Image (spheres, one colour):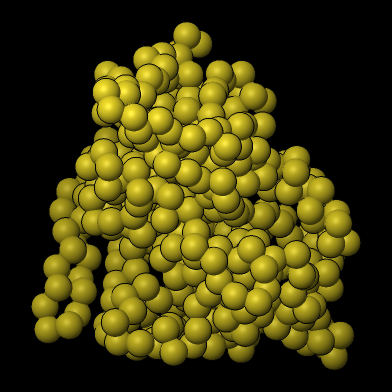
Length: 391
């Protein structure tokens, strides 16, 4: 169940961003609140989740940036406004030095995968030792990824191939989020989903009992542009799900476009809008956002985003594990997805510099998303073990 909410007015003046609580609204019985919010897909993309949350005492407050934000959060006994104000209000995020206090302040760590746990198929140094230490300290670990190419079960196999013991239940991929969303919407059994994406989306839809067409099977299909030629499409398609697709072609683009434009009520769902992805550890590659952008351009419609920074996955895992989001620390390498995801969910946030975001980007005056703390990589948390040992 979604906690109490409030609408917020965002005001910018003299380079300072201020969040103003306007009025509370009723407690929702649904875990979702549809809000138009800024996202990597564009300023009008629909992102699911709660902009502001309050907890036990149902009060709302605005979190201003300060190096003591974690202490302030704990002393008040609740998580403050999850929409961080601009960096100018209090400077750039501090470098994490008190690892023990951060670890002791939360029950659950949510880790992004690409750029945090691995790059491509290469494990980042110190990850196994860090995860083992956190588990030994009684922390719950959850792994969330916007990469929709694999199902949760397939990601479990990837973790295993890298020597990490992670169950499928501890993994939340955007492919799973797309299926979970359609299931929560009671997607009609007589309708189909057209997929721009890979096997991960297919497997999760199949697991959810949802009919689908498209995907990798359409990768070799070609269009016929002879005079008078009309491309047919299935009028029973009730949703188009767009994720990362290494086999994207013009056939898929046209088919998805026809379904969204011509099938009444057809939903346009994006697993994520990430600009880049780590297919190898040598460089960044064009991400799922490029596929989503192509469909946005042809349909002139905005997608429903179910992956980060939408809090749909946060609501799912919070419900699954019965976790209070105020007891979660979100760890990621992207400001506009991972950190915003944590902030939208009311979690503590830790940025690592082992992936997409550089220190220069974090501290840039143009960056308006500031985590609670930043560090070089997650193995820096091992400093807490040394403190415990020395004590």
